[in-house]
Amino acid sequence: MNQLFSVGDYIVDSTYIYRVTAVKLVKDAKGSEETYMYYQPTVGTDKKFTASIPVANLNKAGTRKILTKKECQEIIEGLKKHTIENEYNILTAKEMIYQNSPRGIVSVLSYYWTNTDVLGKMDRELMDQVLDHLCQEISLVTKKKFGDVKKNMVSILNKRN
Image 1 (tube, helix red, strand yellow):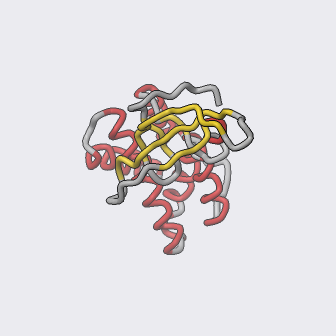
Image 2 (tube, helix red, strand yellow):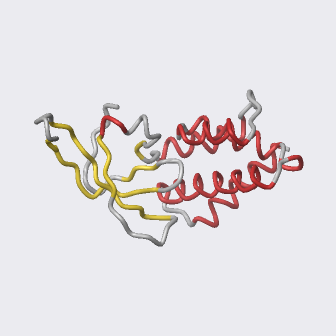
């Protein structure tokens, strides 16, 4: 992952949005140096903590920089046009979501929304979590209210059916 990170940047994993609090070069016991990123959650939790991760491991951990405004618009347009290519069950959906690829998230959300009437409770809860998380990220980037973003997303998804 060749992305440069600065204090104040936002990163996102499959669960939370975080703000980068520090980026430091750290030496391990063997004298090897590795760049670590320190971050705190911003939305979605009432707990305040600081975590760290080697920058080289971000991709493996399913962590990425927050979307840009252009990418948010592409996701919204993608939801309107997305053709369902895969079927998901709870395990394959969670695996795709953990990878935290916006395209994969759109694929899972589109499939689940189209099949809402046959989903079990856990699948419905996962769908709601994915929708809320995506809306939080888009809301943060576009500076629109979460409720307005979610209402728009639900409207787009409903038009797909």
